[in-house]
Length: 255
Image 1 (cartoon, rainbow, N blue to C red):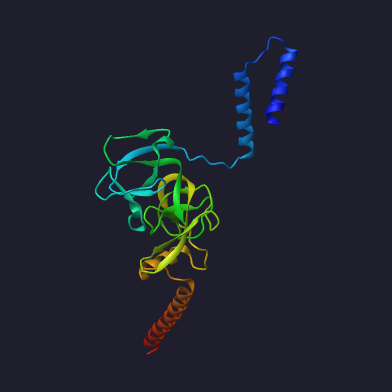
Image 2: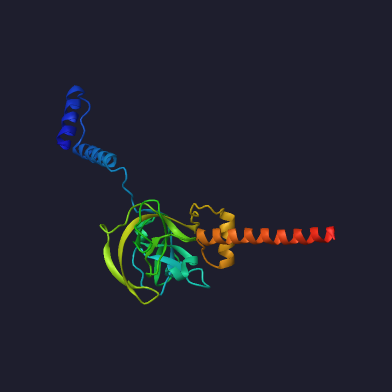
């Protein structure tokens, strides 16, 4: 239908203006442009995995496309598969060199192209929960696979798509406690831009400054109730101490 409509319009234009006689190649080109334009209008949320910049690094690991990588400790040109243990060195995502508008290669052996900017398809899991567009992506306990960032941590970028139980495949892995877990693993487009993510503190009755001090003293995250109980005990003890001191001073003055 679309093709016939375009051809009819061109035929009418040709009949009105005898000098305008488009060739078959011109008609085919116009048809392709029209189809592409209509496809773009009806797919506004389409995300292309085309990165702006990638660079080659050497690696002894066998890395799949979409794997997240970190810089190997003590080096500047070697990468290893990213995990939660080396998240501070998170660098980027392994891609095909053809998916980068600008790729830098050193000519060494055992090279992989690592995207450090732009949009790339990234392997992710739901270990940190289902992923939706806008979530921050960091490394996970599974080698080379990302997850949603839920704490203050270095991230590889921001998800541009969703991952849930319906668009991924179930896999099993053994966690740090030796327990076998079932997770969903899939691929989502991510806007690559490595940086540090700072989780917004939960809204509580406790001022954030006091919460941070308590967490630092305790060496872990402390819930609201223990802080409130401790604050009440502190205030009561302060009142008792002040009362005792006042009584002692008053008695000494009277005597």
